[in-house]
Length: 285
Image (cartoon, rainbow, N blue to C red; front, top):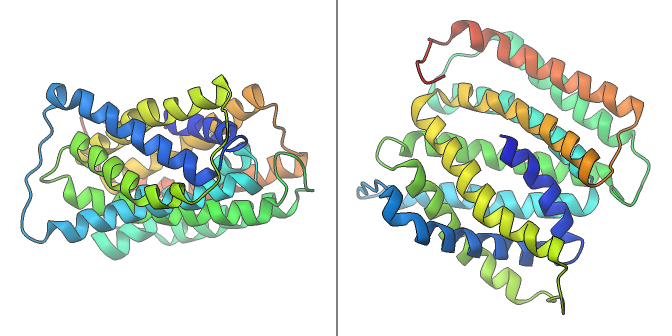
């Protein structure tokens, strides 16, 4: 989650100098090279069964494909700090979706929490005059929310696939399919003549560190925990994203936006409280 929080800052730095689709393609390509370099060390478990291609394709289509389309576009319109705050809605979204698709239990209080969290995101987006970091926060935050919806699909599908595929195998497959998806998108956009060392380092960091570390560790967690429990740890992302955006990009939130953040966290707390009480204890938690 800390790695994912830092990715908002790195992505924001990179897309200031290059087209978002080009940046994401570069990220996927570097991730593929990283996975190839490490494949003999991790020896990924890949127990393919007839028909699995449907679930594997759907997983990659949700994330990284559509997820990164929405997120890269979102950061053109909103700040890294605000985009990071929108991720606070993901745990409750996952909990609600887990009820429908995985038959996990959810309480009425969690529905209230989801409503509060979404209201907080809307409030934070509306109370935001255009700035260099966020020229159209409402649009940007909506796009980031759509990215969170894609993350829900990814989490639920990955949870099912983890029975037969290792965390490394899933993360590697995501990178390879993501690279193929973004290749034509990157081929038809304008390529910059040069990239600063800072932007280039950001793309390398996104591909080699975030794609391997964040996705690998999250997939490993999904193999050991309930989907709703693993999703609850997403609460760390907005905290990390806001702090890093303030330190690295000098972004700031207005007072009303901090209050909206409080509403988001209140909604997330309501969405988690019953889950925490109801879930069994895991030795790996």
